[in-house]
Image (cartoon, rainbow, N blue to C red; front, side):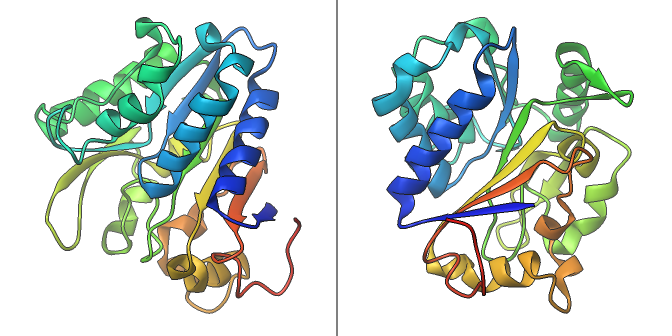
Length: 241
């Protein structure tokens, strides 16, 4: 694992944008699973506003690591957020956008999206393989939409599962561990002081760390990179900046 720490959220967004450009350069196709949340929103803004001309958008294919089971124009939709902050600002072909249909029946959509990944993505070890999975982490240590109370979903034999938010009861379609850990590269984008405690527990593998889904992110390629701001990293004893 590699841990990169930057001064603030904007610097995280800038450096991650450069990282994405470098990773995707020269590829025939580059398949990315996106995250929702406040930090990716800033990253998408910076990527679109400052680096749009540096990305070969015709080669980029966008997917989602999870989606709330709402209409695509709902304020809680990860797809809507990505459209507003990234897709509407860049020249990506419509056919390269593969959204989770949060408005459809959750179980049926989890199956459909899992089948779509089988069809669209290259295979490695018999499983669909993303070039890059972008993850966030909640204050409770969840990632994608795998929450601590449903951590068993991480080891599901299916590509996607229906998860339930522990407080709102909202249903969400989420990638499972078999797909996330089969990616070529997995990155965490985590910012803010409220994340610092879980960041330390998970990265330093302190007692009880396996209770948190984010601690189970371990790509088979070993290519795992944490992008943190100083606030999220404040409790770590050492880091690379």
